Length: 129
Image 1 (cartoon, one colour):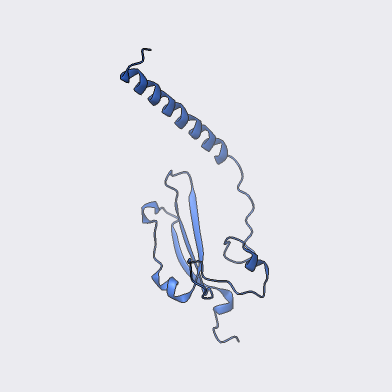
Image 2: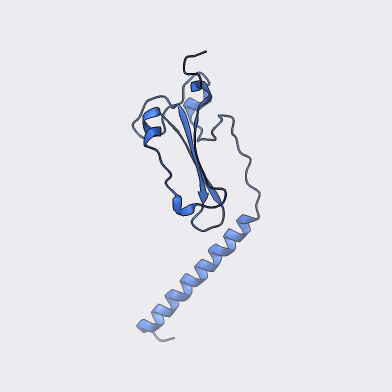
């Protein structure tokens, strides 16, 4: 093909098409894989950090710059943009940041969509009893 604008555009388009096809093939292969086992030992399935390893250390709010203790676990389960599966977003939040929380992925709502705010087990009674 001659080195013209039309030829360059066609080659670029063909390269993009091949890349999309490779990505789709890889995604299909990954869809058949079993999910890795989940470690929900902390009760909310959040990211493990050093301070989480010590059971005596209280959980902190997930929001950047907030050092308040976390009192709620917020969960939102929604459909991934590609439509290939569900995504779960979980965060431990303090009382103030939990009040500000709202569903963020309403465009990904599907039959099993979840938006849930649950108190952490240590804060259920609130009086230490």
